[in-house]
Length: 312
Image 1 (tube, helix red, strand yellow):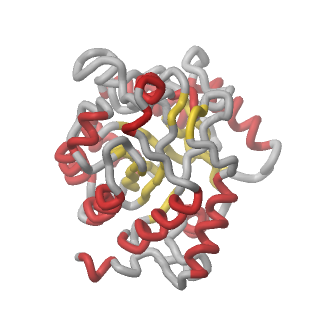
Image 2 (spheres, helix red, strand yellow):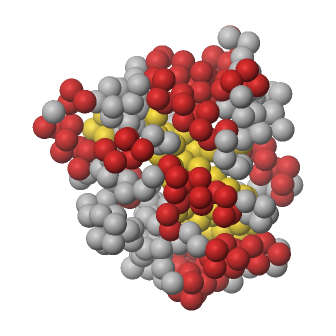
């Protein structure tokens, strides 16, 4: 339900209503790879991707999952004494392995008494009915399960350009397979990818409205070190367009106005470590940008889904 205080459907309110207590995600690097890294679909990975941009220090694949969980809880418990945790399998493609291996990794995390569920980041082309049946059973066993699909764009031309090695049709198929299982279904989208016009970016919202998406993470394009996109940017920057902060705020407002108000917005912004970030550099934390978006929505007397029915 739309949060009347925030003018958009926000994730923190959803979690509070769902559990009634604080729940913290702990990032896990379980040593997975991706089909466009290992050569099964492609090589080199997505052109924008450097997984070190979001892995905390405790999150290393050389550490056992149990150890990563314990260190993550030790880190967050210093700030909040009473809370439960979701094991966030975040790095690379976290369903890209045989089911027996997935079970072994997931269940290591679920063995901890304070872990109440899993958040699993993956690609739409790396999900099977067999895996979904297992995750559905975990829900029936009382665990919270969230499955996050990286869409990045709904434009196949863009997906080819960034070496995603998947199509939007893969996303449609994955969501169709995963729906109606009591698994919370999330999507990631990147705004500002090379070659996309403003119209293209806003069309992502229209395309996602047609999918059974529960949650959405919106990221702006960032050029980070040690990626193919960083090389492309250094070689020829003419194909890249970066928003000013004001332009990005306006784009987010327009995107929200189109977006189905039932979709829970988990984030608007991606914040890479300063030592890895090449461009753009806004100098803002996530909460600071959220505050600006809330202020802009109020100034415009707008809200998520304001134009939703008009474009359907």
